[in-house]
Image 1 (cartoon, rainbow, N blue to C red):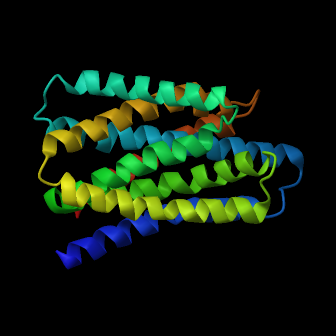
Image 2 (image 1 turned 45 degrees about the vertical axis):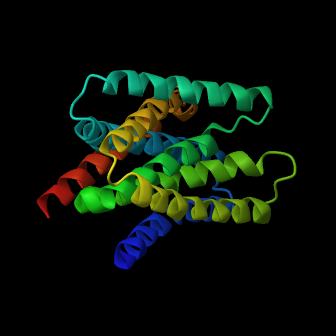
Length: 241
């Protein structure tokens, strides 16, 4: 049991550390010329969106359906996730604190880390795959979330990076919650993964995909393709181990 706890904490900390790491990369001097900086930023937004889409299609939905015994209740769960994230976004919007990149980081990191903790006993290989995908998506999301936060009033570079570092703690907490309460409750574990999938799909098409678009530029759409392929490659690689 103690080994399992260390295993989950290690995986979630490494995956979550990519959030402040992405922010640290974004804190370096801005890229010149300006058109290149815009291209890189939008490429990374699309890359994160592609990885999220890949995580949903190759891990979260298949594993969620499997945990629920391939029940048709998977469909209402996905729809409920989209509606839930829509409601959260509206609440944040009313408070004038809309930050879709940061919300995307947390609203997929926490349920994925929870699912990771539950899968660590049920399916260790899938848990490793999920940790890899979480890390890959947190890096570009952390980069974009930093740029988003640092532009808000009252957020300095140091304060933003400190805040993003504190978010890493949510990973182990969510992972241990999944380990102690979900490893023997496959229906609940599956529902969480499917609800997260619906919410992530909502965020991709509502916020992330529109932000990634640039007129007459090829980088952002290719970034989405590369991100999806990275998720697929990770899935295939783990499956061959």
